[in-house]
Image 1 (cartoon, helix red, strand yellow):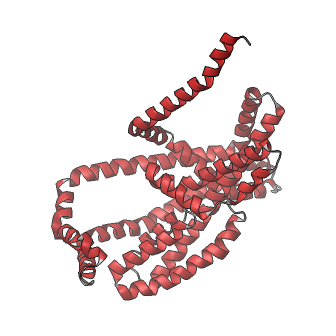
Image 2 (cartoon, helix red, strand yellow; image 1 turned 45 degrees about the horizontal axis):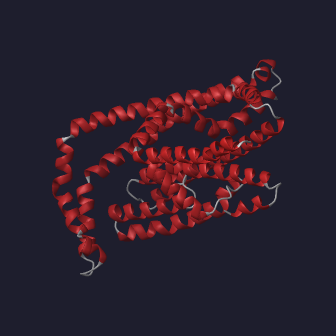
Length: 382
């Protein structure tokens, strides 16, 4: 290489670095616009995302029903096991949704309406608890009692009344859009389960066209297998465990005659999707809401069986459902959940952990491959 070419070549890394720094700066400088665009994109493809989530969740029952149809002595069922099993799961799902709409949804709606109607009473109760604390306490310095007292006196109700029609219209539109996306997601999930072999063949052919080297294809297959395992472990197993949490916590609350038992049980089921922290947050929220709605004695009665069930679920039920650990440290879980919730809301909190696990596994495999299966394995404890 002559001197002129050498002088030009040495500036290439600097130019690349300058471009990267410019992209990073522009991203930070226009973060709100970029995040808004990303949010719109995810909203548009949300039915597909729901479809993938539902497909993972329904895969186990779909597979078991398909095996039963394949063993059937009737040629009609054995030859069409995949399609009939998909139809069976779909019909069972419609039945379950209908039962939920008839028996559970009205109770939840009544609970929400009743809680909203008594919010002023509950705020006054909290104010009394804070005012009974010793003077000079932390809550006294925040003047939290004064803020809540103003809210309880009617400022919240005035705001709600002044914008009631607008808020109701927005709520109805948002609810209708969410229901439509969920229903479309269910239809997409049935298609994914029915045509999963053909979909896999298509992406396999696409991979072979893009990547010519067999070694690269093998590594991609390994990465995708790990991604699939993590997503299946988290979505399907956590989903089933969340249903168990909803039923069990609701049952405990009903036994102790706690107000809004179904609503609080739903909170427990939803927050169970957050590893390590979710169950604890749910217990704290349920205890606080029980304290507000049922008094101190009721809260004490409830918190003990809830903590016992949390330990039983964390040490016995969930490990037997998941069968394999996500292999991720609690600190990384906390960081992932906080970051996911800060940027993408509740949905980000749920998906933050599987995304981090997938990234970790890919980086682990890459480092292990680069070092010939050597020091990269030390990252397993992260």
